[in-house]
Image (cartoon, rainbow, N blue to C red; front, side, top):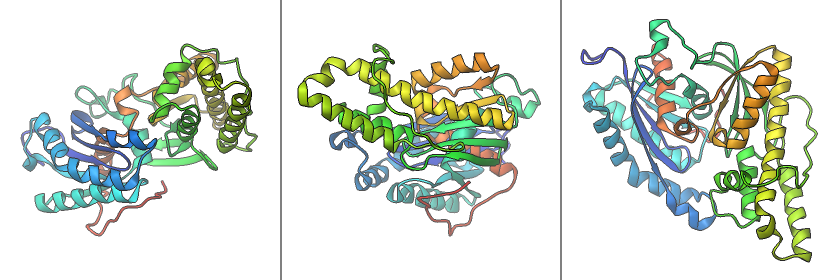
Length: 351
C-alpha cells in the first residue's frame, strides 16, 4: 500500500456490454469514473456484439489513461485491479479481462474479479467524501444489512437479498426477458430509436398511464416474466395499425405511459411480496432501469405507504460504469479475495 493515500487505491475496469469504463477509487471514495459510450449501435437498433468488442479495443487504453490522470495518481499508486468477469457479451468481456490481467501483471498487483450484477448492488456504497463506512458513521445514504435490492437492467431482473457486502442471494429472477429488454423491444415495435428505454420514459411523462391496459403475467413466487407482455403489446399495436396507420404517432405518449405503468406495477408487486416474506424494510434499487423516472416515483410512493427506507443510486451509477466495479473490488480487497491470471470471461456468472 502506498504512503501517499490513506486508503487502498483500486482501478476498476468495466466492459460487459457497450460501455468502456475505468474508475479509480481510494477506499470507497471515487477519484474518477470515465465512460466511453458506443454510438455505433444506434444504426442497428441494438448492441452488435462484434462491433462492441472492436470499440472496446479502441477505447480501453485511452479510457484507463484518462481515469488515472483525472484521479491525480500515477499507475504505480494502484494497489489492485478489479474487472468485470461476467455476466456479459463474450467479446466485450474479453477485452476488459485481458487488459486487466496484463495491467495487473505489469504492475505486480493483485487482480480482483467482479460479478457485474453484484457490483450494481454495491454501487450504493460509493462515497463522495471520506468514507463513512471506515469512520464507523454509516449515515443515511447507505443501506443497512440485511436489505433487498431490486436490480433491473436490459439483461437482468432480480430481487437480491443482501446480508453483507459480499453475501448476496437472488430470491427472485426473470424466467425469460428482462424488464429493460421489454422496454427496448416495445420501443422498437413503436419505431422509437435505440436505446428505447430512456425515450419511453420521456414520452411517458406526457401520457396517461391508464389509457391502455396490458396483461400482467401470473408467475408464482418472486420470479418475473416479461415475454408475454412484449408479445401482447406487439399484437395490440399490429391490430390497431390495421385500422389506423397513424395510431402509434397519435397515441405515443399514452402508449409509453401505459406500458411503463404495467412494467413498474409488475416489478413493485414482486418487490412488495419479497419484503413481506422476508420482513425486510430496507429496500434498494439498482441497474440501468433504476434510472427510469416512473419506477423511481412509484417506489417512493410505495415506500411511504409501506414505511420502507429506500435507497436509489445517483443517475451516474445506474447504467454500466466502472465505479461500481472499483467499489466492489475494494470490499473484495479487504477480504484478500483475489483472482488468478488464468481467469477467463464468463457470459453467465452466478452470485
